[in-house]
Length: 252
Image 1: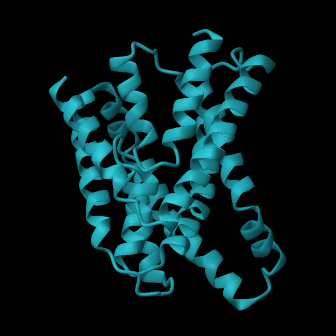
Image 2: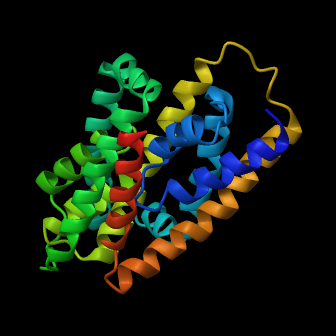
């Protein structure tokens, strides 16, 4: 894999990690339709480090606020909500890991998953903002939605933000919580993947800088774009794209 392929995959990761169109699903699509080989665990880890930095950068004020006010009850509750929402992804990811890996070997299941993502996003047009606060039950439900996104083709941001809005949580707060709960999941998946690497020979300075910088820069722009789209209430637009991508994948 040359540097151009790394940049292309980094751009793809940066765009699809945050926009509700499924980064893992598009990785499979890229492999089958564009002839781009799988980046392997090494590059996937580096791409996720880049997008993790994007979340930290965009939500740096929220993260600083949490750290500074950890001794306050509202912040402690938020931290517990984040932990609650993280548990389902950990359990499902570790329990069904081998089965999930097999889903990356075929484009058709990804197509059906994209169709499901499209349906979820399309339904979000009817979700009403009821200014509902987070709770342990809501956190668990949002966490289950995040866990389902382990399946390639199910968008993590699409599933978590949509279920939050369905529960009546304001879009801005839904996005904030969605990306805060992504931090421990991305870190955990990255550490697990790093420990499973059979060789570290590919971790050259050029590879590390290119992969992380590309996914970080594009990821930051994509995340800011998504937040703007949520502000104007056009989240469901991405459902149209997912429907088209899903149909193409199923018929391929």
